[in-house]
Length: 229
Ligand SMILES: Nc1ncnc2c1ncn2[C@@H]1O[C@H](COP(=O)(O)OP(=O)(O)OP(=O)(O)O)[C@@H](O)[C@H]1O
Image 1 (cartoon, rainbow, N blue to C red):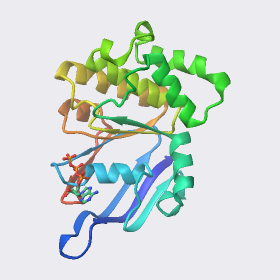
Image 2 (cartoon, helix red, strand yellow; image 1 turned 135 degrees about the vertical axis):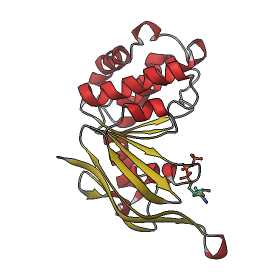
Image 3 (cartoon, rainbow, N blue to C red; image 1 turned 90 degrees about the vertical axis):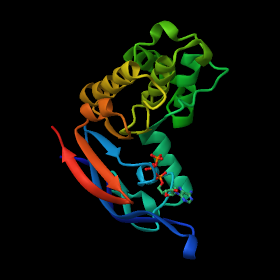
């Protein structure tokens, strides 16, 4: 078993004094290589806060967050940014594509940001769009694509730099259930064929079906952990 990410006694408190919100309290979790982990729980239970900590977008108030053995929660901003760009991919509910760029250009832009060598861009763009089944839409702009196609494009952008860890915040929330299921299966294939680890937040039962591990959060604490495979 290879550990990709881990949290130890993580607390995240927003604000101070009477207005303080304890978004996470004593969270312990681990993300293993080649597994798809789902964070579920009611609105406000702390899912996005935990995802942001794992992705180095935020730092814990106390406790530790590790990525591939390094305590990223303690690294300065520039070092965390470097790790994030090179080794992580992000997917959001609202796709986050640049509207004036074609699907291929959006994916290439992601590669540019990741620092991947320019010599690899063309091949990686083709490979990623092909993986998500979007080769025929390469020259289309986001407004010319369906919601499912836009999310597949966002996935292609996130995986083009071959990240170790993919983080997704409610990736199927804007999609109808059939399209959501297709996207869930795509995440499953990424883990099975691409050897990636994925952590995603969701309320979608279709996504939970394809998960290896399901962590349930309640009021900032891990309530249950289910390992299904
Ligand atoms: N930047 C912030 N400042 C103050 N409070 C915050 C901030 N971010 C989150 N919180 C609070 O922390 C708690 C956890 O929020 P979080 O967004 O992690 O929940 P969530 O489980 O992702 O919810 P949802 O399913 O609605 O997205 C909530 O009470 C929220 O109001």
